[in-house]
Length: 173
Image 1 (tube, helix red, strand yellow):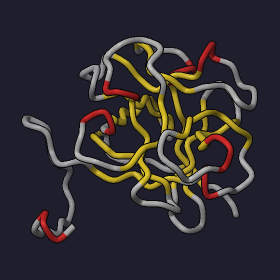
Image 2 (cartoon, rainbow, N blue to C red):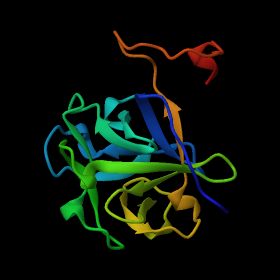
Image 3 (spheres, helix red, strand yellow):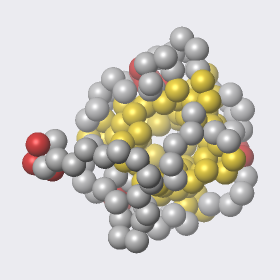
């Protein structure tokens, strides 16, 4: 399937697997420190699964972590562009290792491409299970490389973009 550049509103999102909506990426243990691993776990209400997408330019974004109050971001270890390179939380600065390009496939799933090269955010070992590492891998269209970006409840002081919204009871989710 073809990939098309995509843009979204700056804001807070949960990043869930397109194949398993209950599998979200998170900052392991909710720890606010450099080097903390990013991995897949059961979607829950904790802020270690909340990420702030901030547009750099075009379809390129910084993906900042809530546990660090946006001081840290999803980082490719060593700025490396090879298969199997780990993704972790690290201090945000303006560099390719913490920038990601957003694309959508023909079904509307998101593919997150590291700005270090052409590798994508991928669930390690094709596993759709809790405690599974997130790393970079070349894109080959697997479900482990496709994501949904789910807006998080608005935080105090956050502007809501113009648009049409459906409001429902949280107990019906």
